Image (cartoon, rainbow, N blue to C red):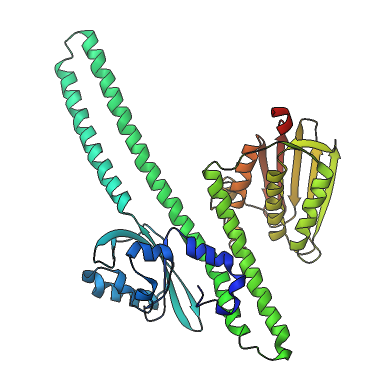
Amino acid sequence: MKRLFRSTESDYHQVNALFENATEGIVLTNGEGNIVLINPSALKLFHYELKDVLGMPIETLIPTRFHSAHSNYRKDFYQHPSNRAMGHGRELYARTKDGSEFPVEVSLSYYSHQKELFVIAFIVDITLRKESEKAMLNQKKKLEAITEDMRKLNFELETKVEQRTLILREALQELEKSQKELNEALNKEKELNEIKSRFVSMASHEFRTPLSTILSSAALISKYTKSEDQEKRDKHTKRIRDSVKHLNELLEDFLSLGKLEEGRINAHGGDFSISEFADETVDEMKTILKDRQQIHLNCSGADHFVSDKRLLKNILINLISNSVKFSPERGGIWLSMENHDEELEIIVRDEGVGISESDQQHLFSSFFRGANANNVEGTGLGLHIVKRYIELLHGNIELQSQLHKGTTITMKIPALPSEDQRC
């Protein structure tokens, strides 16, 4: 990463962290198919040192018997570049430094810089999965054979005593239960692979634009060396900061989802002032408002409430950010907070682009984006994370929307026991 961001290294610690700490191997090749960048996970995967692979052709990481075919595939890709997600196409194998081979899944993405095409490969070692699939298939065959034998035995012994028949039936039920569990495990594995493919495809798409912006602006800044070029330097510095901020927002969504999946986020009740909390949140959101956009705030009921203020703020920031992004300039955004003693009702309303009925049923799913949101930056995780936070607070959320008329989101949060009461 230092090669790409030499002049602005201090501004890219988020990008460096993503690249250096990614669990998947990431390899970047230039227009000639030579390796120009490789992350630590990829080096560990292939047992190479960084100095050994930089500048080497990508075929270095591929078994020799596939070199000729891969060279043709690579040339065809450079002529007709496209994003290719994991889990599609032929079985792939990679080669380590000592010549050993292992199965992999590869997702390809690309971008152009200074008229040269660069290809990004995301590489995952699937050795354990292949072994697991083989073991599960063998187990399934064994279970099927046992089931068949038991059915034959049951047919032969159906004239024997009722007790023996009951035992055999119970055995069959257990075998069928095991087979059902095995099928469910296989379906779950398939579902996880599909989610992973969507994640990699989405991440490569969302990261490509800000990374390209950073690369081009970093290159241009170095050309503006005169004092009268300060305005141009400031312009490109702002573009870099905005792109890094966007990357940081993407990372925050991924980290929040990861913590939720691991069960590392819990709700903690605490007493707070609703009006102060609302004013503080609105002030924070003013920095992202478009030209002449305005947030209208209304608070009613008792001013104090017991809940997890941190989770509530994350929820409101997410929802208000969506209203800002999907509302026009000069548009209004309304935030209402009404305390009904043991329940806090929160309503966020806008007059933006709205959401179609067909999309509304999928909005709280991970990585889903509405058909009219393709031109707006985002991960498709925001509303999914909001719903998970609402569940942690034991509340519920409802969404009403019409295309071109706006969206209203209503949440009802019950009061939590305060930490002092628990003690």
